[in-house]
Image (cartoon, rainbow, N blue to C red; front, side):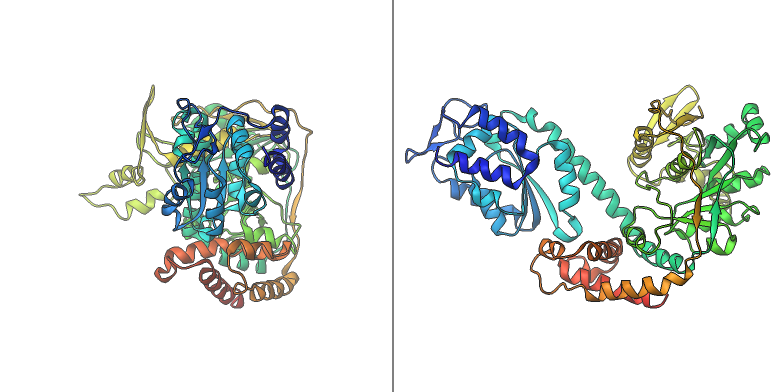
Amino acid sequence: MRFWEANLALLRQSNPDLTELVRQLEQVGPWEGPWARSKTGENLPPAPGGRPGSSLVSVYDLKAEARRWIEDTQDSGGVVVLGGTSPYVFETLLKMEKTVFFVEPRNEVLRSLLTCWDWRGVFSSPSFVFPSSEEKLRQTLQARFFPMWNGKLLIKEWRSAVENEAATFVSWKRSLSQTIEEWTGDLSTQAGLGRRWLTQTLVNLSRIRPCRLDLGDWDHALVLGAGPGLEEALDDPKNKRLLDERPRNGVRVMASDTALPVLRQRGLVPDLIVCLDAQTASYQHFLSGVPAGVPLLADLAALPVLDRLTTAVLRFRSSHPLAAYASLDYPELPFLDTSLGQVAGVALLAAARLGARRASLWGLDFSYPLAKTYARGTYVYPYFQTRSSRLEPSDSLLSAFAWRTDLVQRFSSPRGTVYTNEVLLSYKKRLETYPWPLEVLPWAGPGLELKFSHPAPLPFQKETWENPDTRGRWPRFKERLLHLWSDLDFTSFRTFQEFETGLGPEQRQGWRALWPHAVWLKTKKKTLQQAGWKELAQESRRFALEILGKI
């Protein structure tokens, strides 16, 4: 009983999110039994859901049991402990410089733990995390643990705490799985594009030209993707009238860059072209040219060559770390959330802020109807036609394109078989569940059905976006970034957490601008794949300074 009040006081002090939990524990008071007994007669917490007298920890030697349990954590940077156990487990992990996340949602178990042992050494550690909910666990993992720098995250169950009440932890495990999936997707993208993001963002910042975007008096956006359903939507008589009556009817066409050649083949001119992709292949969307006077809304990391195709390029800041740092010198650049991972999402967000009250979606199939990947006219058709032969006709190559990823899923519909995969389904879900501030009207094409909830009424807004002439700012921005990266001191800190904690706000922003490039570097350079955080950080900085110095 002597540890109860001191444990609660430090728990409340160390984590304000647990105030309500501490209040509940104070109301019921310390655990008074039944207790399990060690072989030396000491009280031990009972195993939840176990038979009477069964113990949560070893009745012979709980410290030896804990040492055996943590043997396989040597190569990890962090451990998620599912289920309550003795503080010795956590103390040992913390001494090994692990970040420890503790999941125990049952008040009865917590009462017995906090009554039985002294937890003050654990609760006072900045590397110990006790999330108050599944969502808080996800948020804390995203904010506190970075696999690239911290290493592997290990998830371990304390068996006697979990085995009889496994259902208690299902939602927590689901939250962990979602977080790991997000990490995997983010790291995979950064591994492919990290260097290009860094280089192209810096180049584009040095070349920003004045551009003003004002779509006039309008309220209805046609957001055009490049899926197979775009062909049907463009052929529909009612939709043709919508296009023909522009601009009098208040309709504006916001086309993805991939859809541009489809429109060009049909003699249609969009009102805005949205560019998100940083890959060189995106240049193929513009081989037929950019219609005169049509502005491009382009991510700051998108291809620099876009500025050579037209003078009307308006750059926007996204959630890339370097773009966030650039906002210090380029605050006028509009910000658009690119976490949806798709051009259509960016176009919808832009539509809502530029004056649209509703948006129709054409060509967003999130699937391959009858194994068809893109609308006819997109870049894949000439690409595969030049590679076709009698043995491999272009139709076969185009169909095979639908099977280039694993885990293809098949759906039957009244209009035929539809194929999709986990990536497309995740994009679809993100688009459907986003809290859109305007009415979204999907076209009923051959792909998967899109379902949107009706938006809550929001005040109407109509913004005018502008890129001012910022070329004079580049030398100042470049000089400050050179100094910031050069002054980062990695050698004086033992752990990544210590280094991060010692950074000021601007330093941390500038340092994190290197992260996507570091992921790319670790993936491409075999000598860095097993490197520690210091070596990876130093090499990433060295290469980044070389890139910056050449611009």
